Length: 209
Image 1 (spheres, rainbow, N blue to C red):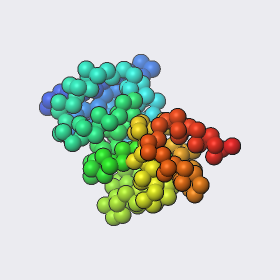
Image 2 (cartoon, helix red, strand yellow):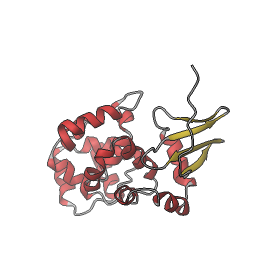
Image 3 (cartoon, rainbow, N blue to C red):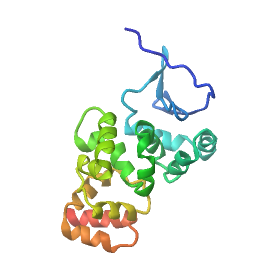
Image 4 (tube, rainbow, N blue to C red):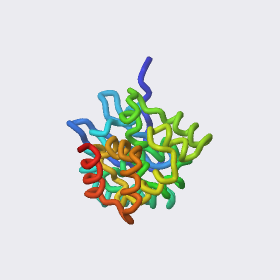
C-alpha cells in the first residue's frame, strides 16, 4: 500500500521549519495538516509531530512567518494562537484537531498545554483527539479535566485562568497536576491574583519537598 502524498493547498501558504535535517510544515486553516518531507514527497504525520519537532519549529518560525500565516486564519483562531509564543505550534495542533474547543480554551488557555501533551500525561502511545472531541461534546470542560487527570472542579479552572503565560513548560505539567489534588496547595494557588512561572515552580518544589 502506497503512502498518500499530500497536495499543496490552494493558497500554498505553509509554516516550514527543519529538525535534524528533515523539513516539516503545516498548512493553513481549515486543512491544517502537519507534514514532513521524505524521498517520496510530503507525507502527513499520524499522529502529530513530537514535542521535539514542535520545539524546533518554535525556534525557527519567526514573527514575520507567523504574521503571514495569520492572514489566512479566521480572527478567532488567530487571536487565540497569539496568546502563545513557544507553544504556538502545539496550540495550533490542539485547535486543528479539536476546533470546537477554541472558545472554551480562550477562557482557560493554560489548559491547552495539558491537551497538547495528553498522550504523555495519560501514558498512551498515540494521541486521542477523537476521544477528546467526544468527551468535550458530552461533558464539556469538566469532562476534559477529569479525563486529563485533573480535579474536575471550578477551583481547577480558576487556578488555570490565573496562569499569566499559557505556555506552561512541559516539565511543570505533571507537578502542577499533582498540586491541584492537594487542598492546601489549591488554597495557596487561589490566593494569588496572577500565577507566573516562578510562582508555579516554587509551589511545585514546595509540594515535592
